[in-house]
Image (tube, rainbow, N blue to C red; front, side):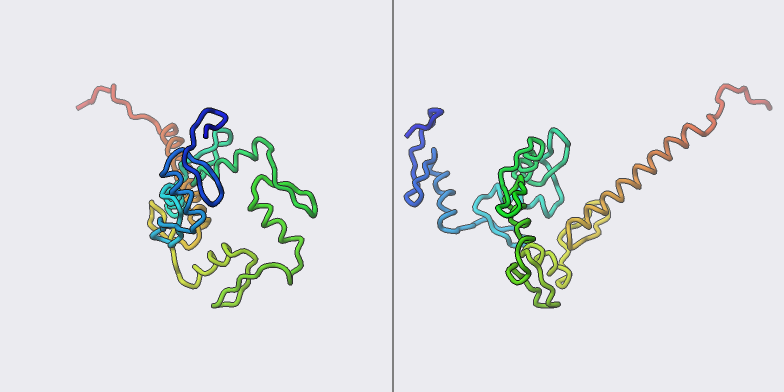
Amino acid sequence: MPTKNGEVRRFRCDICQLRVKKQSHLKVHMRYHTGEKPFSCHICQQSFTQRNNLKQHLFYHTGKKPFSCDICKKAFSTKGSLDKHKKSHMGVKPFSCCVCQKTFTEKSSLKKHKLIHKKDSDRPKYDCLVCKKSFTQKSNLTTHKKLHTKERQFSCDICQKTFSQKHNLAALREKVSNVLSRCHTKRRTGARGRARPSFGMTPTF
């Protein structure tokens, strides 16, 4: 069956009737129905349905941000994060809170926002089994647990110092960058201030 732009999508999903162009695309699509995630991260064991998703996920651990915004130059680890960010420049906020009508560019941001309207008793709670501290988001609990396990998966490629949280590594990199910038400025200033030796004088004996 051809699409509006003339593409022929011969392969159809028997579950949701989605049509795709290639058999390989259908195979990947079926994983969303079966829950199969054959590609797993060797660092945190998170699994993915596609190899490319795993590849982009690894950027979180290495600190690489190969996707940059052509408007403000802000960099991101994944293309999906960059695409979401670009909506902020376009003013597109399709997700609206049904309580206060505040709008958001991302569905995840709206979901987090809705928690402020809930009573404490209705908010989801994720408890740390070690110190009993509670969190409203599972991701925050996962990050917190690393404090107890001493897991340090983020490492500086300059000094090899390791951190349990990504923002601590980012803070170190910014600090190092500022120090190097100041040293470079002082070096240039010092070079201009020093008197140059004279090489044209005839030595006397």
